[in-house]
Image 1 (cartoon, helix red, strand yellow):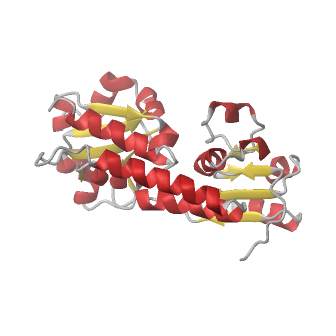
Image 2 (image 1 turned 90 degrees about the vertical axis):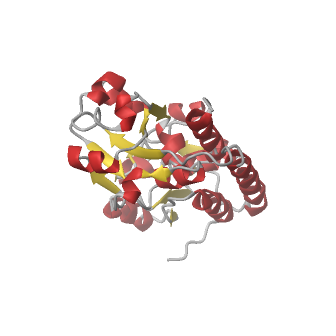
Image 3 (image 1 turned 180 degrees about the vertical axis):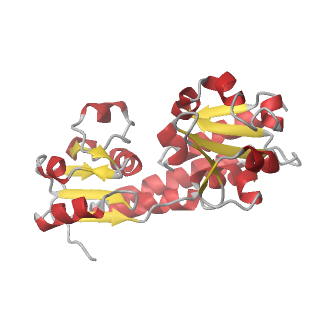
Length: 267
């Protein structure tokens, strides 16, 4: 459905990654509310919250008097967004991107929606240049490390990432093999000891919050199957900021650079 945007003076963002893009494009002062996944930049933490991106509250959104609401396909529930639309507020839902190329598309789409396409093109070019510079840091001839990304929200909520995930895109750009994808997994699959053993990653990546939720590296090693992997045996565990790693935000080039430095720094 085509949406006409004529006023961007009061923006509500529905997802942390979209919120970060809006700020990176210089429209942070126009953001009047966002969801709980919006954690960067720091000033965004002080804004009114409208719930979590998948469990949004229509009344909370409308109470902020937005002139435009923007998010991606993770936002919901659909009934809440329909309620906002029915109140006469333009709601724009963009595709949920899972690749580094998608991170660039996201910036361009947000810029087009908000009427700052030229500024968005400049930011997109910067991101592309940062990603290219990071890719060039992968040592020539280095054996590709096998990497598994575990999404954790406590020891009982564990998923191994596979194909079509932001982590797969970052791992491949870093010259690695996504262990979950190679094992035939798609999206985020419930973690099992057998599945992890079959994937047998050399490195494990979690988000900072995820690693903390399982009790740090020692707690992670207590999860069935982890200690039996090459990563577990050598305590090769990396942790990245949740939004920066999974959100494919304008910081994606810096995240990729940091990942490559961690993987190959001892070489």
